[in-house]
Image (cartoon, rainbow, N blue to C red; front, side, top):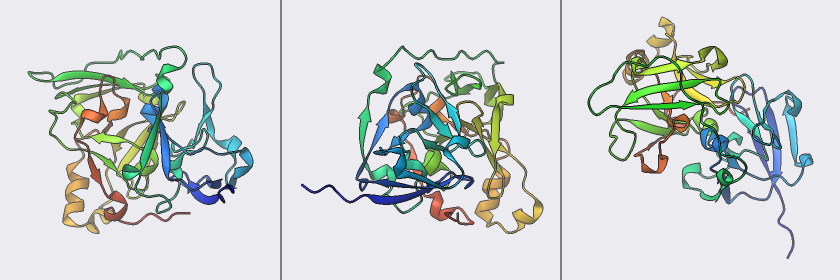
Length: 282
């Protein structure tokens, strides 16, 4: 049987410091991994045959931030400005919009990476307890992978009984990041090691996305007041979201310990279509 002709996929990090093309057999299904890193990073593999099949149009492979763990045999490489993971063996989330079917609908093979190597040691939260303790409230902890940034949150149990808004979004940022968001009050969240994050801002710059400088894991959103001129051009719904969110601390559920995402009632938000202005794929 003749070998399938490869297809060229174009991709980039969100801030477009790195733009590349990857030659692969047509992608009809992806591979996920449940290891301690890939779970937090929502990594989806698209395997390259060789390094020559990945060509950078902008930026260089060696300029990506590299993170290793465990036996240190694999480099997880991400953009130091926006945090988008680009390379382990090819990350399909960084491919540009419209080249793949909706990632939520694609068939996914699962690789049991958690069964390899020594057991991941969960970084212990040592920061101050947040506000919000009370009846029916549970305290969760979480962290980036390397443990430089750790969080604690008081919330209703994050299981099938949780009925507040939580979502995965396909906007230009979240489709690359793979975050699953909840929106607690900032008072209910405590951050340890906030000096170890890079906050990436785009669009109106209202919601900065905080990721660990060392391992690249996205952790939370940080609110920044928008300029008045920008607010004036928003729809009423947009103003409600921008101005009404100042008290929130959006949190990536993937970083929390003891939470099974399969139990949660995660909605799917079409941010790529509905959040103005549109993103220009480089």
